[in-house]
Length: 220
Figure 1 (cartoon, rainbow, N blue to C red):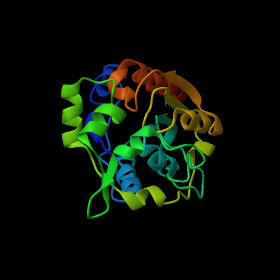
Figure 2 (cartoon, rainbow, N blue to C red):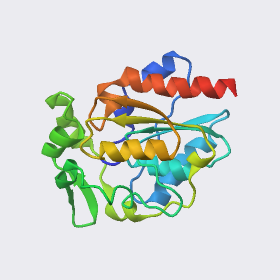
Figure 3 (cartoon, helix red, strand yellow):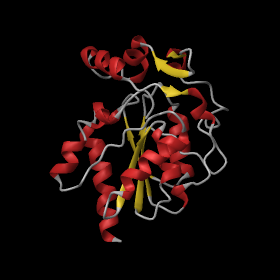
Figure 4 (spheres, rainbow, N blue to C red):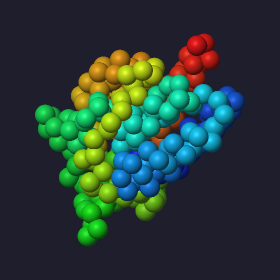
Protein backbone atom coordinates (compact mmCIF):
# COMPACT_ATOMS: atom_id res chain seq x y z
CA UNK A 1 0.00 0.00 0.00
CA UNK A 2 0.92 3.66 0.11
CA UNK A 3 3.50 4.80 2.66
CA UNK A 4 4.85 1.24 2.94
CA UNK A 5 6.62 -1.46 0.93
CA UNK A 6 6.85 -5.23 0.79
CA UNK A 7 8.71 -5.38 4.07
CA UNK A 8 5.49 -4.53 5.88
CA UNK A 9 4.58 -8.20 5.35
CA UNK A 10 7.72 -9.54 7.05
CA UNK A 11 5.76 -11.01 9.98
CA UNK A 12 3.11 -12.69 7.81
CA UNK A 13 5.35 -14.14 5.09
CA UNK A 14 7.12 -16.73 7.31
CA UNK A 15 3.76 -17.93 8.65
CA UNK A 16 2.51 -18.57 5.12
CA UNK A 17 5.76 -20.16 4.01
CA UNK A 18 5.61 -22.52 7.00
CA UNK A 19 2.32 -23.80 5.60
CA UNK A 20 3.86 -24.47 2.21
CA UNK A 21 2.68 -21.40 0.32
CA UNK A 22 4.93 -19.64 -2.16
CA UNK A 23 4.95 -15.95 -1.28
CA UNK A 24 6.10 -12.98 -3.35
CA UNK A 25 5.82 -9.41 -2.03
CA UNK A 26 5.18 -7.06 -4.93
CA UNK A 27 7.13 -3.82 -4.69
CA UNK A 28 4.74 -1.19 -6.00
CA UNK A 29 6.42 1.89 -7.51
CA UNK A 30 3.47 4.02 -6.27
CA UNK A 31 3.83 6.30 -9.28
CA UNK A 32 0.43 5.57 -10.87
CA UNK A 33 -2.31 2.98 -10.81
CA UNK A 34 -1.12 1.69 -14.19
CA UNK A 35 2.47 1.32 -13.00
CA UNK A 36 1.43 -0.53 -9.85
CA UNK A 37 -0.92 -2.84 -11.77
CA UNK A 38 1.89 -3.59 -14.24
CA UNK A 39 4.20 -4.44 -11.34
CA UNK A 40 1.61 -6.85 -9.93
CA UNK A 41 1.01 -8.43 -13.32
CA UNK A 42 4.71 -9.11 -13.82
CA UNK A 43 4.73 -11.10 -10.58
CA UNK A 44 1.51 -12.92 -11.48
CA UNK A 45 2.91 -13.81 -14.91
CA UNK A 46 5.90 -15.45 -13.24
CA UNK A 47 3.75 -17.87 -11.23
CA UNK A 48 2.79 -21.36 -12.39
CA UNK A 49 -0.23 -22.06 -10.19
CA UNK A 50 -3.30 -20.28 -8.83
CA UNK A 51 -2.57 -16.88 -7.29
CA UNK A 52 -4.15 -15.20 -4.27
CA UNK A 53 -3.69 -11.45 -4.51
CA UNK A 54 -3.42 -9.71 -1.15
CA UNK A 55 -3.68 -5.93 -1.04
CA UNK A 56 -3.25 -3.52 1.86
CA UNK A 57 -4.67 0.00 1.79
CA UNK A 58 -4.03 1.58 -1.66
CA UNK A 59 -3.05 -1.87 -2.98
CA UNK A 60 -6.71 -2.87 -2.68
CA UNK A 61 -7.31 -0.64 -5.69
CA UNK A 62 -4.36 -2.29 -7.43
CA UNK A 63 -5.59 -5.87 -6.89
CA UNK A 64 -9.09 -4.83 -7.93
CA UNK A 65 -7.68 -3.91 -11.33
CA UNK A 66 -4.93 -6.54 -11.62
CA UNK A 67 -7.05 -9.39 -10.25
CA UNK A 68 -8.78 -10.11 -13.54
CA UNK A 69 -5.61 -11.94 -14.63
CA UNK A 70 -6.49 -15.54 -15.51
CA UNK A 71 -4.16 -16.97 -12.84
CA UNK A 72 -5.78 -15.02 -10.00
CA UNK A 73 -8.09 -17.28 -8.00
CA UNK A 74 -8.95 -15.10 -4.99
CA UNK A 75 -8.51 -11.64 -3.48
CA UNK A 76 -7.73 -10.63 0.09
CA UNK A 77 -8.26 -7.01 1.10
CA UNK A 78 -6.47 -5.89 4.27
CA UNK A 79 -7.77 -2.53 5.51
CA UNK A 80 -7.92 -1.73 1.83
CA UNK A 81 -9.83 0.12 -0.85
CA UNK A 82 -12.19 -1.85 -3.12
CA UNK A 83 -13.49 0.43 -5.88
CA UNK A 84 -16.01 -0.50 -8.54
CA UNK A 85 -15.54 0.01 -12.27
CA UNK A 86 -15.35 3.73 -12.98
CA UNK A 87 -14.47 4.60 -9.38
CA UNK A 88 -11.20 6.00 -8.11
CA UNK A 89 -9.72 5.57 -4.67
CA UNK A 90 -10.60 9.15 -3.78
CA UNK A 91 -14.23 8.53 -4.76
CA UNK A 92 -14.56 6.03 -1.94
CA UNK A 93 -15.65 7.48 1.36
CA UNK A 94 -16.24 10.95 -0.05
CA UNK A 95 -19.57 11.06 1.78
CA UNK A 96 -17.91 10.33 5.13
CA UNK A 97 -15.87 12.67 7.34
CA UNK A 98 -12.17 12.37 6.42
CA UNK A 99 -10.17 9.90 8.52
CA UNK A 100 -7.99 11.49 11.24
CA UNK A 101 -4.79 10.36 9.55
CA UNK A 102 -5.44 12.47 6.46
CA UNK A 103 -4.15 15.50 8.36
CA UNK A 104 -0.75 13.81 8.64
CA UNK A 105 -0.31 13.42 4.86
CA UNK A 106 1.69 16.15 3.10
CA UNK A 107 2.83 16.61 -0.54
CA UNK A 108 6.34 17.40 -1.68
CA UNK A 109 7.24 19.68 -4.57
CA UNK A 110 6.98 16.81 -7.07
CA UNK A 111 3.45 15.88 -6.04
CA UNK A 112 4.29 12.81 -3.96
CA UNK A 113 2.56 12.33 -0.64
CA UNK A 114 4.38 11.54 2.61
CA UNK A 115 3.28 10.75 6.13
CA UNK A 116 4.97 12.73 8.87
CA UNK A 117 6.89 10.63 11.42
CA UNK A 118 4.33 11.75 13.97
CA UNK A 119 1.56 10.62 11.63
CA UNK A 120 3.08 7.17 11.29
CA UNK A 121 3.21 6.82 15.05
CA UNK A 122 -0.16 8.40 15.83
CA UNK A 123 -2.33 7.47 12.83
CA UNK A 124 -0.73 4.81 10.61
CA UNK A 125 0.52 2.36 13.24
CA UNK A 126 -0.32 3.53 16.78
CA UNK A 127 -0.44 -0.06 18.03
CA UNK A 128 3.23 -0.69 17.20
CA UNK A 129 6.31 0.17 19.30
CA UNK A 130 7.83 3.61 18.79
CA UNK A 131 11.13 2.12 17.62
CA UNK A 132 9.30 0.31 14.83
CA UNK A 133 7.23 3.29 13.72
CA UNK A 134 10.42 5.37 13.45
CA UNK A 135 11.81 2.80 11.01
CA UNK A 136 8.50 2.68 9.12
CA UNK A 137 8.56 6.46 8.76
CA UNK A 138 12.13 6.34 7.43
CA UNK A 139 11.37 3.58 4.89
CA UNK A 140 7.88 4.67 3.82
CA UNK A 141 6.94 4.61 0.16
CA UNK A 142 5.60 8.00 -0.95
CA UNK A 143 2.75 7.81 -3.46
CA UNK A 144 2.10 10.14 -6.39
CA UNK A 145 -1.01 12.05 -5.34
CA UNK A 146 -2.73 11.83 -8.73
CA UNK A 147 -2.80 8.02 -8.46
CA UNK A 148 -5.66 8.30 -5.97
CA UNK A 149 -7.78 9.94 -8.67
CA UNK A 150 -7.26 7.24 -11.31
CA UNK A 151 -10.38 5.18 -11.99
CA UNK A 152 -10.33 1.40 -12.27
CA UNK A 153 -11.56 -0.23 -15.47
CA UNK A 154 -11.97 -3.72 -13.96
CA UNK A 155 -13.40 -4.93 -10.66
CA UNK A 156 -11.95 -8.39 -10.09
CA UNK A 157 -14.04 -8.92 -6.94
CA UNK A 158 -17.12 -9.28 -9.14
CA UNK A 159 -15.99 -12.71 -10.31
CA UNK A 160 -13.38 -13.79 -7.75
CA UNK A 161 -14.02 -14.97 -4.19
CA UNK A 162 -12.88 -12.25 -1.81
CA UNK A 163 -11.85 -11.88 1.81
CA UNK A 164 -11.69 -8.61 3.74
CA UNK A 165 -9.98 -7.67 6.99
CA UNK A 166 -11.57 -4.62 8.61
CA UNK A 167 -9.23 -2.73 10.94
CA UNK A 168 -11.59 -1.53 13.66
CA UNK A 169 -9.26 1.19 14.97
CA UNK A 170 -8.03 2.40 11.60
CA UNK A 171 -7.21 6.12 11.45
CA UNK A 172 -6.16 6.12 7.77
CA UNK A 173 -9.31 4.62 6.21
CA UNK A 174 -12.65 5.00 7.93
CA UNK A 175 -13.63 1.64 9.52
CA UNK A 176 -17.23 2.32 8.45
CA UNK A 177 -16.00 2.57 4.85
CA UNK A 178 -14.07 -0.68 5.20
CA UNK A 179 -17.18 -2.45 6.48
CA UNK A 180 -19.26 -0.98 3.64
CA UNK A 181 -16.74 -2.06 1.01
CA UNK A 182 -16.53 -5.57 2.47
CA UNK A 183 -20.30 -5.83 2.25
CA UNK A 184 -20.37 -4.38 -1.27
CA UNK A 185 -17.96 -6.98 -2.61
CA UNK A 186 -19.65 -9.81 -0.66
CA UNK A 187 -16.38 -10.68 1.06
CA UNK A 188 -15.80 -13.15 3.85
CA UNK A 189 -15.08 -10.57 6.52
CA UNK A 190 -12.87 -10.58 9.60
CA UNK A 191 -12.83 -7.62 11.99
CA UNK A 192 -9.64 -7.03 13.97
CA UNK A 193 -9.19 -4.43 16.75
CA UNK A 194 -6.13 -2.91 15.10
CA UNK A 195 -4.72 0.17 13.47
CA UNK A 196 -4.23 0.46 9.71
CA UNK A 197 -1.50 -2.20 9.74
CA UNK A 198 -2.98 -5.46 11.09
CA UNK A 199 -0.32 -7.46 9.22
CA UNK A 200 2.16 -5.95 11.67
CA UNK A 201 0.14 -5.89 14.89
CA UNK A 202 -1.83 -9.14 14.36
CA UNK A 203 0.18 -11.14 11.80
CA UNK A 204 -1.19 -14.54 12.89
CA UNK A 205 -4.76 -13.37 12.35
CA UNK A 206 -3.94 -11.93 8.95
CA UNK A 207 -2.11 -15.10 7.93
CA UNK A 208 -5.14 -17.14 9.04
CA UNK A 209 -7.38 -15.23 6.63
CA UNK A 210 -4.97 -15.75 3.73
CA UNK A 211 -4.68 -19.44 4.59
CA UNK A 212 -8.47 -19.69 4.68
CA UNK A 213 -8.57 -18.25 1.17
CA UNK A 214 -5.91 -20.73 0.06
CA UNK A 215 -7.86 -23.60 1.60
CA UNK A 216 -11.02 -22.53 -0.19
CA UNK A 217 -9.20 -22.35 -3.51
CA UNK A 218 -7.83 -25.87 -3.00
CA UNK A 219 -11.41 -27.11 -2.70
CA UNK A 220 -12.52 -25.62 -6.01
